[in-house]
Image (cartoon, rainbow, N blue to C red):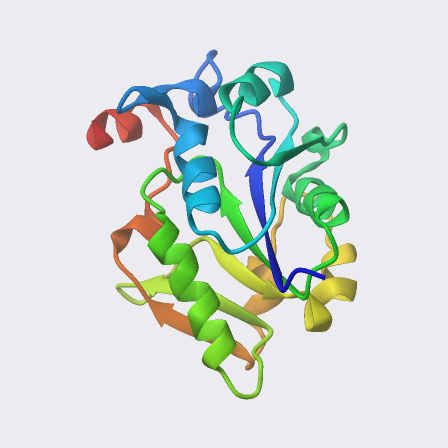
Length: 194
């Protein structure tokens, strides 16, 4: 059983971005979603599962040639929780999972490795390791599935693990750079990265 797996959430509609799929917008010569996928693979931490939904065919094609598994979430319109659950179901059995967002191109393999290192060093094992920058939690997040699997299975609507973790005392915060707070939601946001 792998110690850790990675889930790339790439199922959303990206409606705040406009008519064209946000995750396919070019940044540094590659589709936005490919940056996060390449970081996940480059981390070398474990198997990667990409969860697709809206624009599944086109977003999936943007990931061609990468060493990752793909799963389509037919219920993506019901909210983020369904995509997280689809990713967990498709992940080979693992004790923990790092959940990445497809619209965060400044997250690097080093960020992911730092989350995993912090988790391995912690005694006792935390429920999660979350990055923090300037006092605000960001993404990606490492989830201890041994402690959180039942609660994650019970999530619904447009919520990820953030609300679940907010009230827990056993969440480890890991200071990181601004890349863990930078997601692309609008054309202006993408233009600022270029």
